[in-house]
Length: 584
Image (cartoon, rainbow, N blue to C red; front, side, top):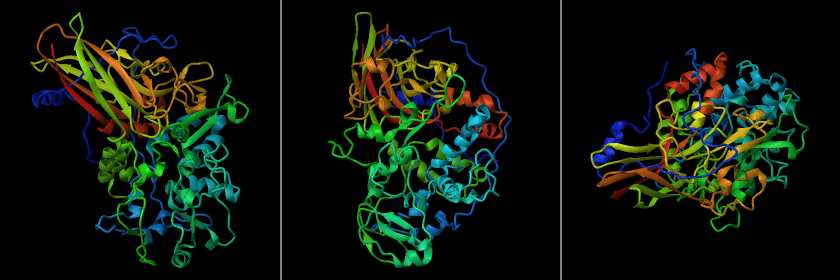
């Protein structure tokens, strides 16, 4: 059954009207020239592809046992026995397990989009089935992947449909879990190509009690954990370093040639699916940078008071404890988890609260500002906008299904909309965006917008070996466009190809080092007051990207995800907004 939706979204006419009534707001969009020989803007000639249809099925994912005890790993429930029911000095709940279990990391293997995408990839590239099983579970079901490797067994979870009878099912369904991350070793190569792309190292132990649980404190208390969980707490300063996150968040995948064959496996021949860590290394947030902050500093915020790390076995209160909320931007997926718990085999509570804290976190990611407005000689309003990225990586970062766009609208003194660029429809598509009408193309970068059919979209678009647009990761060999907002300190002229800016933005002198400055031109023939609202909007699942996937609704996993997506009202989040009145 469909769960009750927790959030509504979208910029409706009623909302626009209310913003105007509440005085001095609404939308504005504008962009002028901008030559992009590789991908010119197509207006009025782009064919609309037939919209995908589905059959309305829903998943039925089996419940798993989070209390499992394996030879190499233990489930999160075993850890939660002691690491839940924790409070700070102010009485706030800072339980490790309950904070983690409503994160996307905890539910990485239950993610219906990921399941649909991997199933479609195997269908379209059956010769790569083993590689897809191995590569994709490495970071989405890492305990299952690593346990199978240690046991000398080929993991077939994805290709076999995540059967509950699989010996590694419980390992997989626990997602990116406690005894996985806290066993990652510091082998001296963390943060390098040798350990990235899922090449984390976890040692094997003949005696379970010898298995380490690395943590941030130099004087761990061990007896109780050894006796009850068969893990030994060990000081591991690397657990507080960004390099440990790089093992999955700097990821390169194999490229395919014209015949669909894997190009020989050397690192130079791989495609940079995501390079969040390397983006951070090229920012002011890197170690030693002007704004130095680790991944953990932002995504696992430090509790201001002391905390007892366990409810049993020790009463030592620790300072500088990092909450295990794993803050991120994907509230859309969290909303799906909440509304389709039963179908996805999820028992965790607290997703509405997780959505709210992640929504507030996202609001710190960037600011949009209407720097100034003026009227030109042709009675056009020229609005200059500025966006500033406050994250330590590109915005958006990670998997190339994500985009950030500018929604700008202008109303006159009567409340009538005279201009709107970036209007999002209830299905998640954006008016005027080429890639949402035809997934074989994309919207170019702009530094000046003059038409409602032009939309400023920050995104990474993949191309295959022939230069054609693709939304299949295994087919990606380069980016046809990457104008994602760079972080502060990032100089696009001096970074390597793995994180380079691609397309028009590479030649845009107003796009660099965490800032984008651009203009909108709006025709306003009459004198009077005009109200401008600009919004910076985040969308984790771009519409055209999904339409590409939904060609395969004959696959149960794809049809199930489409059913969930179509029933989900929340499809985007506003990061930042700005309001200005212009008098002409």
